[in-house]
Amino acid sequence: MSRQRLAVGTFGGIGYLPAAGGRIVARARYRGWDGRTRLVQATGATRKAAERALKAKLADRSLFQPASTMLTPDSPFPDLVAYWLEDLDLDDRLSKRTRQLYERNMRTLVLPAFESLTLREVGVARCDHFLKQLARQSYNRARQARVALRLALALAVRHEVLPRNPMENVSRLHRPASTPNALTPAEVNAVRAAIAFWEAGRSPSGPRPDGQLGAIVEVMLGTSARIGEVLAIRRRDVDITSSPPSVRIAGTIVSHRGEPTARQDHPKTAKSRRTVAVPSFTAEAVRRRLAKLEDPSLDALLFCSREGTPLTTNHVRLQLRRVMDLAGIAGVTPHMFRRTVATAISAEAGVDLAAELLGHTDPKITIAHYIRRNEMVNPATAEMLERAFAKDV
Image (cartoon, rainbow, N blue to C red; front, side, top):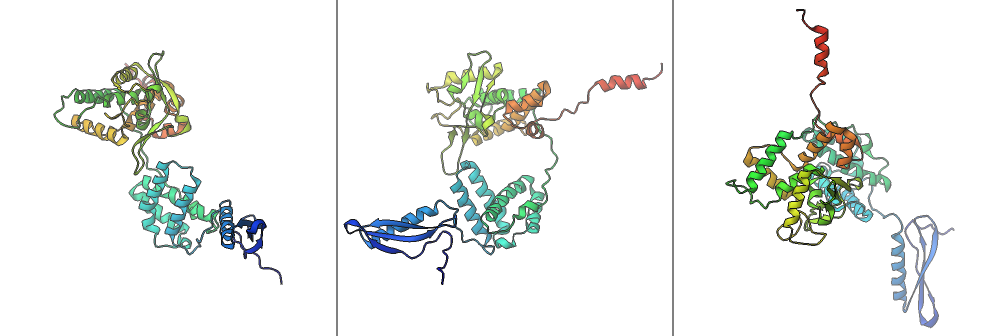
């Protein structure tokens, strides 16, 4: 009768042989992920020591094959979630912020609807209905839930727990029609005036000014940088003596849950790392900030707390919102300055230059999310209609 074949990733009975010096060799047959069976052995001073050494070797071998899973189509959906998050950590390719975002979206958006289901009960119809119901509340929440659900179920397919990913056949989400909102030059100057009034100490209430908000806005207007990228600018990243002066965007500020706010040594995307020539109003704001920095090191942050630590993006958003509320100006956010810059550059030189300035890899992103549509039709139509339909005198 032939010997029973080992299951992949398991080993057979352990045998022992004497070795030189009174030591013991423990050995066993092990069937690897490739299906081949090999003899694995280890030596120890005693049978127990040799057995422990052998089992440690066998455990190491399992690290070189896909992780075993006890998941089946009848496993509860929360078991897949835990397995998926563990797999993300093993892969270790995501930033901490993205990893936390995935976990939050799965916990708050997806699990409440799927936690009582088994994996085989998560079908196309159920996923499709769930996303449509969520999209009625918020397109963005539905989009985020779709990403997390698709990735978790894709892992179940890759590890042969499910035969197919039901998310591949759900209907598309339709983004509500919207127009990117940007500030006009007159509105930009109104924002500047409101901040200057507050920073001069003339406002009777509101957050205590630290003299940085106005400069932060000028840098956003002169670089198109995201608020986190502006707060990550160091002394070494600015050159106000060159012609034209420039600012290098080479990092961003991150605030991970349970960790202090810190500077990340790269911006949001690879193409976001760039050097931007800046207008005179930005150069002047940078010059004033450099004069006030007490830390002479090249890595000193241009904008920081009184202790020299990074400012949080939420701190700036809250400060800006309070100052705008005092001035009676609604809807101004840090990201609006980025859209304002994109709209101005596109109007002057076209969308390709605007996309390059913003660090976008695809101008379609710039058009869809950053440029306010010019509603003014070419005035040449008035002359054409005048010629066509002018009244007889």
